[in-house]
Length: 350
Ligand code: MRU
Image 1 (cartoon, rainbow, N blue to C red):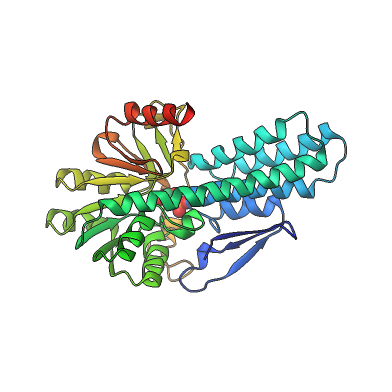
Image 2 (cartoon, rainbow, N blue to C red):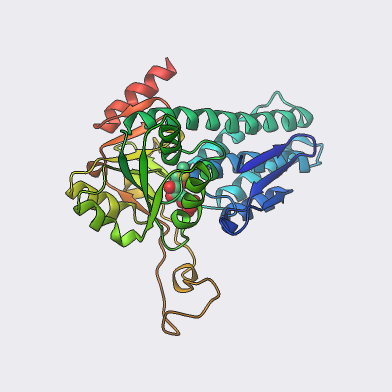
């Protein structure tokens, strides 16, 4: 099952509506670039790698739907689509990574409008395929960390729905389980959008992996009782020094794990690293609608006093000192992160 499916014949994108999991497994057709940007903004499509892949296809849609024959007018229109997609969600760097790649193709001065349409679609498919291959490799490396009998706390959702096909942190758990390792997952519910309780629990159930859902604020309790072997989560944007922006609550979880000497792994593709940023200070943190916090039952009986206000940062930054290691498609990367990642990226450039 893939969370995003490109149809080359009709030039359309189909997505699983992640807002409806677990009540329904429903698909929506995203017929134009505006629909893709809206799907990212409203979290029909969510999870950093899936957002990047969807944005690539969004540009491919814009390339096909723009009928202008004048090359400059054509490019201007498609660049406008890239810029609209850039505004859809601010934190996941995978969005920028995919849009920059699409923008580079569009800059090619040798290509006609007809050639650009084909090349842009090809590039979007390539981003999708590379992402799938990277997540598979990440899952293999991540599975090596898992011992038979481990209990793992997992935050947010990092499974196939968040990454298109193989997950990252959840992919590693899935892979280790397929290898015959016994695993128990403590699933952080992940307030306020409940990506853990709704989506991670649903994915684990599909795989038959044993789990219990825990409230985010009980993670410290389980860690302090010696009931947890490892903490796993993904990343939305990683700074060069190893600071990781991920779903809000990750920082508190990592702090509690560090205090209890439980290893903490952030598991992500190298496309999640923002090499421009020396540390996590400047990572843009998305502020979402306070209603996500206030309307806990989603249109049910109000549980908060009428007129209450709320603050709703969607992500937080975990300082690199709290992180034991990264797991990427190039393998495990240990601290000092900046030094070790630059060895790997310079190797792959040479
Ligand atoms: O707001 P979301 O649901 O898009 O946030 C998702 C996360 O924080 C994930 O942990 C991260 O994107 C990694 S997904 C492999």
